[in-house]
Length: 77
Image (cartoon, rainbow, N blue to C red; front, top):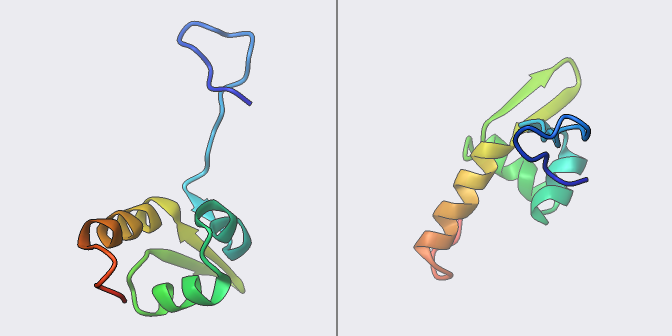
């Protein structure tokens, strides 16, 4: 699917939801479920738990990864 150009009403707009379950978040960033679980439990990324469902806020995951990239390979968390 491509992003819709302004004024192009014949194609649907690509919508990326900001919240994802572990499986989708893992596919999004390449990190494993256990790593995402650890980041969530250490409050390094935002998440919401509704019943048994855990959703990860992807912009917070992006922020975390950008910060890790900025700090370089020697800083690990």
